[in-house]
Length: 453
Image (cartoon, rainbow, N blue to C red):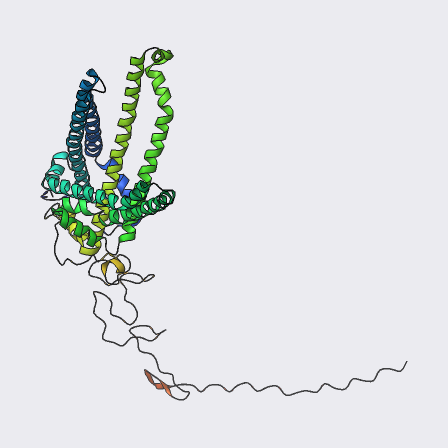
């Protein structure tokens, strides 16, 4: 990271992308999209712009190579031996060219993914870095990222072949029973492939940030991602699945809107039915409209790459905060204005004191200040629980006062009448007055008899 030396008075460090303690589920989701506005010059102009331009150049180059490879075959009879040779040679040229161009496109995509990881890592430390600074961090990890992408691609192809092979074999048999079983096996293989993809994608979701920030190889990065997601599989899967669904649904909606407005675009580019009488104009309009839609769709896909990459980096930082306590090192780095790279791996690092009990391995509810006892819910911080010493203060020597007794004063003894009050030895206590006697019953006099009628 960058070294920033401060002299004299310096203002408080500005708020970074994330708070420097273990992150919640909603924080990771929200900050995955918030990273887009933090450094738009790098993320939007470079990641989206360069990727989109690379894809346009890829499609243009592939189209020109395909046209040049098969144009010679159109000059010979279709059923002649030369036609078959020209078609075979053109097919081989197109396949080799597509592989080379795809490798170049993958290199650009890998660089974009690494830039996203580096940008999120720097933004979490309140640093807004330029493309040159981010590239210095990504450059040593470039070939490792390429190797990881190749490994993932090979593993995906092998898994697809293994899952699809039984259904293909049954379909080749051709009987009605075999076709029914082929459909059943195909559906089961598809569902199994979805589950396998979700599981492996979640377990490997933190591999790319590990390669860039820890500067380790692909195999070691796979192991690190496996370890960091242990005990946090479902939360990591939730982030991955929700970001994947949100970005793909948004992409589908935009694609549908563009498809609806495609006739309007073609009408603007070729008004008054001019293209109906000119096939060249119709072809040009179709190509231009298709290219525009394709460029917009790939730009949206590049934004999806940024969001997914930001989500994986934030999950990686959160996991290392909970397991290795790098939030404390990140806080020291921000407060001191620089220093050692807080993302460097340190063996046997202690978990964060802010982590919860399940991820850290010990009970620590809430977010306590380091060095102080954790107050229970509803207890005011800074006061000890009854019967325990107050954190940071010595326990007083006198006995614990009873309930209702004022601390620091002795409980006065109860005295019987006739004894002396404590502290007043010469003053006798007056005797308790006698209780009042009940009044005697007074029988009312007899009433005189009633007068005769």
